[in-house]
Image 1 (cartoon, rainbow, N blue to C red):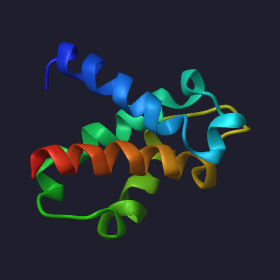
Image 2: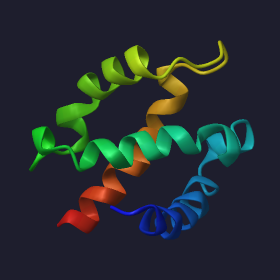
Image 3: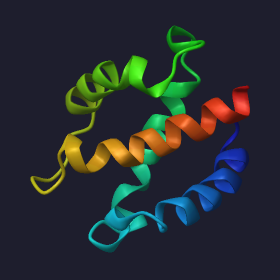
Image 4: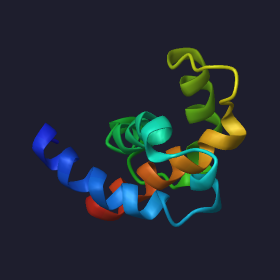
Length: 94
């Protein structure tokens, strides 16, 4: 996926995020890296054919290990953002 393609999709994902109740307390600017993380993970060959429920535990561990966040962010908040990115990518992969 090229940066240009991510730029196009990220605008759609921002609109989707902004329809969630969490967007009121966690604006796109704070959560977009987490959506991008989910998006990127969906293209990982390790997750070919996987659905969100199959991978969320693994993604939680990877997110916690790889993406240090301020104290106000934890997986309970961020999981919805990661799920949105992951699921949208899986829709496109088909």
